Length: 130
Image 1 (tube, helix red, strand yellow):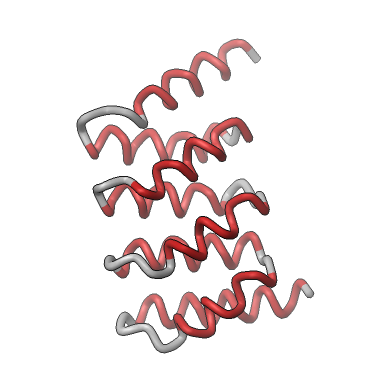
Image 2 (tube, helix red, strand yellow; image 1 turned 90 degrees about the vertical axis):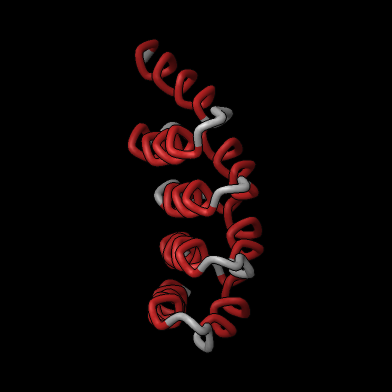
């Protein structure tokens, strides 16, 4: 248990690195560790200046299936980068919360075909759960 906390503490520190690649890797690894203490820091970096980091954080948050992630992921559906919108839509499908239905319906008309497809799948997933 102490080993996992050392690992998560190190990864949480890495989220503050000046190098976006380090921040991206840390976000991905936090999902692999799966410690719920990572949820809030991952939510915070959804506002990162680099889209790679925002995408990694969005994808990672889905793995926690935590309702605290729903509103921040919904906001991310307005991101300028399709990769980030894709990550947010995919995670929203995993979390499966009704609050995401409106933004996912809107995303079925996204300029990006991958975002549209993931939004359609996410809506079906949410419908199946409820």
